[in-house]
Length: 271
Ligand code: PAF
Image (cartoon, rainbow, N blue to C red; front, side):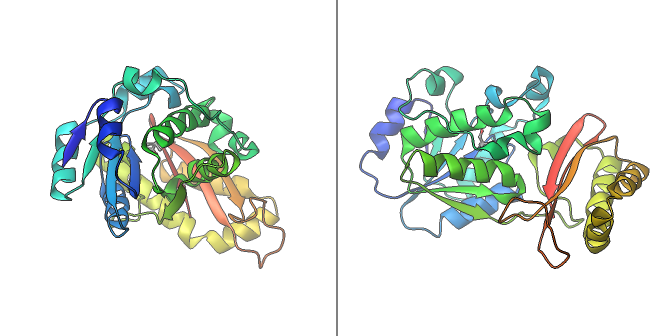
């Protein structure tokens, strides 16, 4: 496992590597990241994992400060997984060069998380665009728990004709149904249980929710979730994940997209 803190050294190392499978992370590695990394290792070539908590994608300074970090544990996990290359840039290293491609923000960035987290996706695309330019990976592995993020990165890549393929990977869940997330580290036992009850509720009621949605009674869902112990619901919306339109007929497939708070911790999921 080779660790790089400088983009110049990293570029030197990878200049002769044809196929790079890239897994961008903000650290706090969990089973979801491990599954992305293992998937990337099934592809020909080398796996490169980046760890960088990108301040530009946090719309609140407090949230950036409280974001769980554990580099020592992360490096142990990566070593155990026999990851080939690690990039651990500083802010200066990754933000101090002129990029070739301008960020392309698809209009879907205005929906869901884009409504409440101003400039979040701009920040995500800024860093991902830089990584893509530096690393020029053949593949980038992204989890669909962050469906909107993955969608917007794909659109940027397509629009800017970047030669990288997005590999979307399924959401990995804890035994109690909660999607693996670095932010789960900020939950206490009781909040973790509430998160689990929320997911169970949404799974069980998906059909009913659809009916209620069509009868525009989604308010009752919000009430139920608050009764389960949710502090605040940022959004709960229903989209056909292929068309990104709200389902029109009862037979149409759809996903529930949710963002909610347990005290100060904001969790997102799609079911
Ligand atoms: O999903 C994440 O962890 C981040 O948004 C990413 C893609 C690493 C960019 O900072």
